[in-house]
Image (tube, rainbow, N blue to C red; front, side):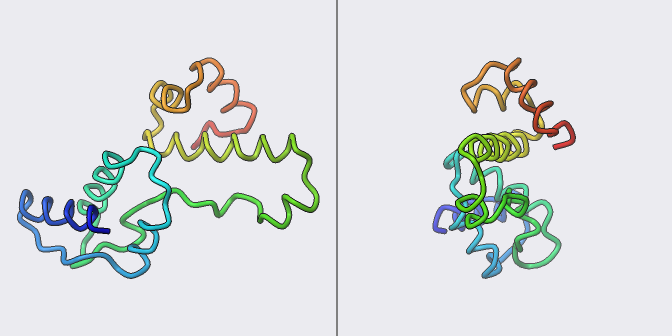
Length: 132
């Protein structure tokens, strides 16, 4: 949270606004997210949230962080899924999140996932992620 608050102060200074902080839910979401892009991703997230915010604090809808709402519950995975299904679901989730993080840029997504772009296109088609 100290880094997020630092970025918030920075954008307040630069853009002449006075957003005072984060809602408790937004702070929790920031703390629970894994931040695969590290500090740069956090800064970009805070900047976007700052620009979307219409109030005096940033809420979770402004953050627009990827969620796992479409992922199957862990109990379901352990009880009925094959290893292949688990692997495919993990790939699908990782690709969906990275596409969102990269704003749909497939070249950047493939680079950040460490795969060839043609493989990414195949997986996007296989998992039905074309509208992600």
